[in-house]
Amino acid sequence: MTSALLLSFAVVLLIGVLISERASRTILSTAVLFLVAGFVLGEGVLGVVPVASGDAVVSTLAELALFSVLFTDGMRVGWQDLRQAWRLPGRALLLGLPLTLVVTAVLAHFVAGLPWLESFLLGAVLAPTDPVFASAIVGRKEVPGKLRHLLNVESGVNDGLALPIVLVLLAVAGGTDTEGLNLGVEILLGIVVGVVVPLVVIALDRLPFLKAESKLQPLLTVAIGLLVLAICTATHANLFLGAFAAGITVATRGPEYRHEFEQFGELVTELLKLAAILVFGALITPAFLFQEIPFLGWVFAVLALVVARPAALLVSFIGANLPRSQRAAAMWFGPKGFASVVYGLLVLESGIDQADYMFHLVGLVIVLSILAHSSTDVVIAKKLDEGMPR
Image 1 (cartoon, helix red, strand yellow):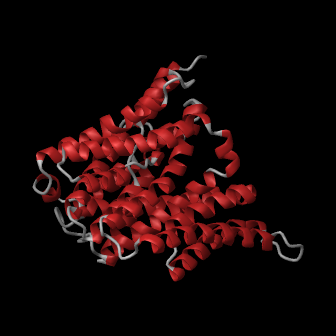
Image 2: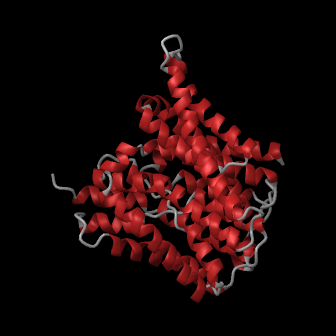
Image 3: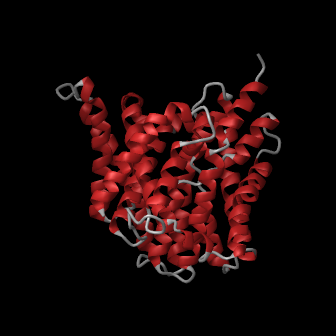
């Protein structure tokens, strides 16, 4: 399976790179290409890449992808960035994120039929956003800077904010062996490792007799990430919060390291993300979509995208100094990404009541999100550009 997966990924990556320039001007996207390729190559259609949710390659790849995402996201938002970005992203994070969670939970209970505890757990899993799937919005200079900044900061922080909620609710539901004090220790230890390791490495690099060669500078940040990953794994600290805390610490104490690592880190993260999307697509079979999810599950998935976040941000932006068109774009562009994929896998592997059904709902929401947001980003980016004063 590994060789087939590697060959499939290489071929799809080659195709994606070769058509990327043309695709960037259309509603096509690299994320959709890998998702569809995984679906076609998966066991449900051609069977070239036969993977199952319990396979080690699935969980390992998803964990590495999320670790990389949280590490690079953290480096986008040092403490200085967070202080400067309080007004709009603060509204989206401190009010919009909890409201999105609550609205999603209400929909999960009354539409999908889940018990309240599982509903709130599902809401926490689906609350984070990943605007990388809406790259035309966050990556185009013609899009208003205030909107790009809002979405970048929000997505860089909400994965880390949602994770402790997921872990606590999962423990309350009986889905982990770690409970109470031990869970708190794992979370706290992950944050401590994520803060201490970068501080020590940066201090060493600034000693007069120690200095990384300029061309190897990006590898220093890679070494920080690997050390955090290894130490968290060895000590059973929470590696995701460790990654997030490490990224913020690097951005805060060594902005130059963030600059050196930016291009290299983004490419590594993008590779891991695309590989995870391919594997995730291979898990989505026709039976998964049309036999294992009831009609009301589909209704919930649609409402989770078109109601939960828009309603939450509509309330959050009351009184905010943001044009109506940009508010609408921010309300719509809340793509579900790797945080939700990995959190969904955590729920599935926990074996709690309704775990399988919840994973199916998470999978369906993510599929619909990737298709919907990745196919509308270019169009809306152009509309925003046309509406800008000249």
